[in-house]
Each structure stands twice: as C-alpha cells, then as structure tokens.
Image (cartoon, rainbow, N blue to C red; front, side, top):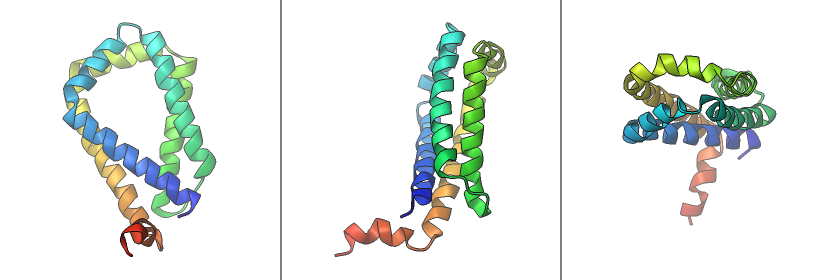
Length: 142
C-alpha cells in the first residue's frame, strides 16, 4: 500500500468512527459543545491546533487532484483552513456556538450521517484500487 493510500485509509477510518461517535454518543458531544461556551477562546485554540496538524499532515502527504482521491485533499485543505481560523480568531467560536447550540442535536445527527457516508465512500474507493484488498487480506490467506 502506498503512502497516498495510507492517508486515504486513515481519513476514511477516522471519519467513519467520528461519525458513529456523533450518533452513538450524542449526549456526550452535546455536553462537550455546551462546555465549549464556558471558555470559547481556550477551546478554539485546542480545536484549531488539532485541525491544523491533521490538515497539514493530509495535504503534505496527499496532494492529489484526480478522481475521487481529490476528496481527501479537499478535506485536508478545509481542516487546515479551520485550524488557521480557530488559531488566529479564537473568539470566532463564540459566534459559531450561538448558531450551533440551539440546533446541536439536529446538527450532530446530520453531521454524523454525512461524515459516515464520506468516510465509507473514501474507504470503498480505496479498496477498489489495485492491490489494496490483497494487502489487507494477505495475513488471512495462508
């Protein structure tokens, strides 16, 4: 498996697990979102740092602008942009929370479903690439 395919696998798996977490652990996520409002400036810095590191990692190792693999690169760019905004304008989170809080349950449900679908699509596309299935099945085929 190539480094590009490894980034795609990582991205697809993370999206699927986070999406499932949004749906299965909705109460926990809603509580977390409500707690963000207590110290939005500090919270924004943590959110920004995590997104910046993950986004830059993706675009550093997955700069692909062909076919469905473009989705992973775009996600990396969006995460980088989100990280920059949160780090440079930490109190922007306050305005965002004012919009999100009244609708957090619906937003989490929709986000969870969309995130799972995008992650599953990335993984499905990855496993259609030549050699990837053999790479993952190799330990089971004696």
